[in-house]
Image 1 (cartoon, helix red, strand yellow):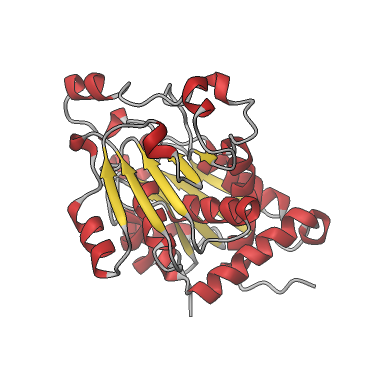
Image 2: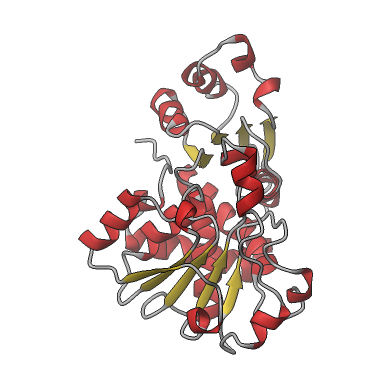
Length: 307
């Protein structure tokens, strides 16, 4: 049976632990995995722009000895001629062994997976899910904090349209004694269905507007997000909201000594460059962990045995 990844919840906690263990071993022993995908091809089907996700998938497959084909824009695919995403995926199944798809429409990767003869990875669909970023976040947290249980996670910025936030909440909600602090203006709060899900699971959370010492004092993780221009229908609303939260050196001076700062990137100006040299700034390490976890995911979905 073909296994796809549409949501971080597609893996059980036990499967997720095995995946993260594999990613950790890849980090420590990269040469061990350098040829495991010899002769295998990854198709990267990116219907909207991406730098980190697309290139990290490509780097992951190349690191495993495989090869890559695909496109980086919907304008360069046959969907421009009216082809359905399902038909595109059915055709790509003839050319590749596994595919990663990013699409601006929510649910498009799921539709693609239903027509696919190869494993399909959701590389981001609209404002819905971004499961491989979540796997990256989880590997970063576990590698640098050593645990998931008992953490207080602050999520800051665009929590309404931020698919990385929604996926991370889903994933971390399965662990014990995890608490969320949701930091956003009223217009960009976490959607109601996400909050209802947390309530149903008895996950403690609070919503606050300000990013300050009081908000940060108990945080283990501060997960910053950008205000995404491409998710706004109104240019005026975007301009008004984009500078609402900026993490700078002054704020970091009152932040907890062991608090990690994460960000899915790209950054615009919500984290000042002066924070980059702070030892608590982990977002560039996070990008590196993204390659390891995508390598582990490709190996897992292809069902490859590691010698």
